[in-house]
Image (cartoon, rainbow, N blue to C red; front, side):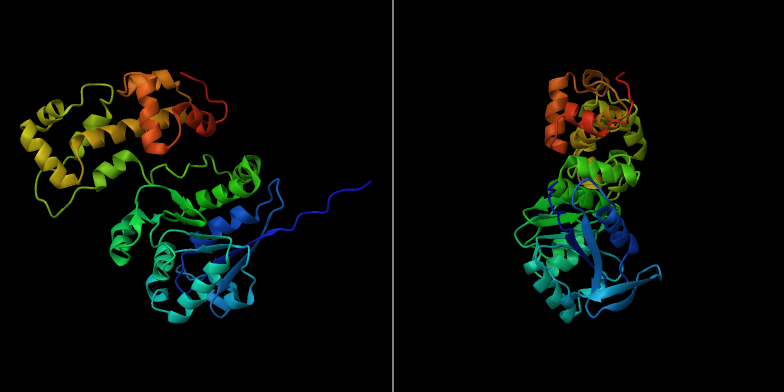
Length: 331
């Protein structure tokens, strides 16, 4: 009986350099190395000269010389780590990376690996992300890059960038889904016990944490952590500026001005973000869309749908189908 010949494995080449973060390499490497339902991948770790490279945690990594590998048609991944700063000063490494990036089918960065892609001009004119704590620095380093600190990962044609550390796993799964389909990516996600494969538009960290960590120490004034906690406990209630100002013990005009100076955003935007984050978590737990809309202050399912479209690029129903726990029951 005639059978189709097996499809060749796709190549994935992951860059390594002294001080690289091992998890930025190991997470995507295991995603690509895990068998799915497609033809699979061949993963190789490369450095400028080959040989042993010591990661930031002291573990040695065996590598190939980048110039000796066939990069044409491969996925080229650039991880981050404490060694990124030194790597950005290595002219030979940047030249080799630029050559490889021109030849690769896809080019992707994890965490601060985006700085290396920015250093060789790959990100110019594109929207990109990195670890949220380094986003401002990336924007200053390469003004031609539109840096968005919020998403888990961003795809711009054949150039992908992702947020910190474990976001590289989400990015690698998304590449597998693009290459071989959803069944392949979900098979790998289950095998790796990745409970929720997050969409690229999902925030890097929770809305309550963002609210607590975003206050600008350069602007003296009240600390709004207590207010944020109160908002999170009253998402279905009246959260207009007058109500928030009363809770904070300030006049509405003074509250709005001081709040924006301290946090860099408006009270209304914080409320919208906290409501969206709560609704997202509730849908993951199996809550019905209409119930989530009412419970978290959206009014009706149509307003919740518009908020999801703006914030996550997906409808609430589609999000619930994709990311609710297996066996979750609508409540």
